[in-house]
Image (cartoon, rainbow, N blue to C red; front, side):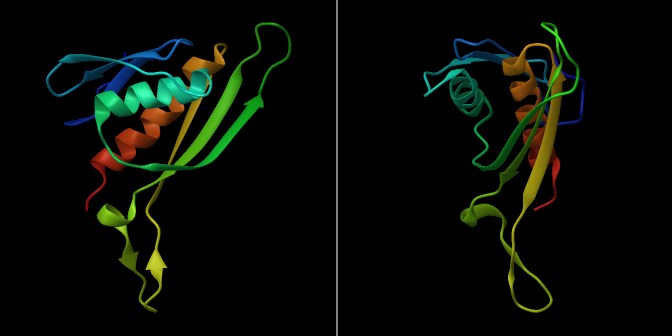
Amino acid sequence: MGADRGAGAFGHRADADGRGQAQESATGEIKLGAAIGTGPVDAVYKAINEIVQAPNNLVEFLVQAITEGMDANGDVTIRIEVPDSRGYMETAQGRQRRRLFSGRGVETDIIVACAKAYMQALNKMIDAPE
């Protein structure tokens, strides 16, 4: 599970079949979710969304290899955006400001790296002041 990050933070476990598990650090409660998606990353993200229930939009998804060979580490970077109903603010000039949160995961299993990146971004969003 992920590290304790304060009240409301979640750790995770996920697999390529879209089965996800999250643990809330404040209570230690384990919640399970499963989902079917257009691929394993979509399925895992949907399973995590079922568990965490924090509305967001995925706006950037980047995968890079950071080592070589069959046991290469994959580096996943994502950005999520808070939907209209929760997080838009105006700048001093009166323009809308988007609330974006980034996450990064590094792992030899790219599906796990994706889940780590997503959970990091979600934890930032959940912990952010309104």
